[in-house]
Length: 564
Image 1 (cartoon, rainbow, N blue to C red):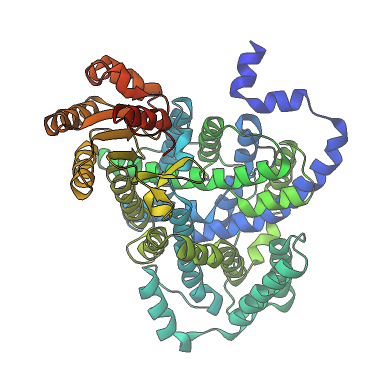
Image 2: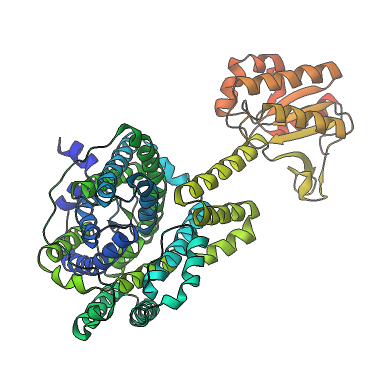
């Protein structure tokens, strides 16, 4: 029974096998995480148009949930910029400017996201962690980063800018520069510069906490609130009472679609972070278990009126660099953040919104990855274009539609590659005695009268016609062969349509006096070949374990010397 429970809650095993000597490191790491998580949580609440305290709510219970259900020792699950941006894009149109309804719909959306994650993890859908390609994920995060930076410029400069697309917001910011509030701009820009300097000079220092303390001190001791500097305002202490709000029928589908999109992006992003730190520290992680864990974290956040969460790369980096050894780091961080919520919320009312804007902009710069975009351009132009489409889609038509368009284009490219896979005519390199594609050099020579063809994909219903046409083209473009050997070593699967395609070619070649043979069939390809009757029709003496064996059989049949 204990084994069964620990299978679903790996954190229990971690607690049972916990080593006391780790606690000192986990204590320091947990406090360090809390020092960064509180100001970033407040900043992300601001990003998603919530009261500051909601950001703190969203930081606490997810840490416990992941410590119990997750498989990573270092990962910190907390509010995330991308998840917040997606949430706002889904809920804001439905709430129609009603703050109370906005909060209720957020709770419902967060619960839906949690349920989908848990169901997906149980069903083994953790494989979607590989669904978003790195170029699309990078492009998406770059679009989010640019949108956040532009969206915070108005707060940094001291005037309100209505939310909108990237270019519309940028135009409004520029057109209203004359309304800049000087004191607000000085605070915001100074703290932004400080955050960037601390990031590069002393990266282990909790820079967001320092920015928050300095911002609060400046406002409180210099009386800047009375001089027009905008502040967060009163932050209630204590935990909220859980509630499940009502939802109307016409809101369910938009919320469900939004939840599905958030699951895709937040889980893929989380697994990128989790895998990176797991590889660095030398242990495996379980994608399906972590999908369940993310669902538990979202449900825990919703229980305390929080919003959707994801793997927080900046806070995970703090946990790792501070020496965190286990999930106990998250539990300590949870206790520290809860203490702030219970006893230390009073000073937060003096926190200038410009400081939050500076924190968000600094975090957004951390999301932006120009080096990877440059590498995509050098390695693969189609994937480079997918990355740019994701970026500009997020910046123009919105977060979720931009990602969906980029994913759709990636799927189209994937299907195109699957329907038209790589294929080659193989020739013999005399000096080495190896068969290689003719395109690899002039040394690969075809044996007179023998055509060796390789198809580098499963032969299935969606590429069977392409396979037939390519074989016909090669036979027509070469001197008429006496034998045609189909090298099937790169064809792991064969379905009924693929078998019918091979049979069609066999019949055509037989009518033309060409002997059809197959080399290196294996696995499911061989099974379907046998079950379809094709193996018997072609003949066991024309199915070879190696291409060399087929070539020797051809030479023997033609009374040609076997030394080529």
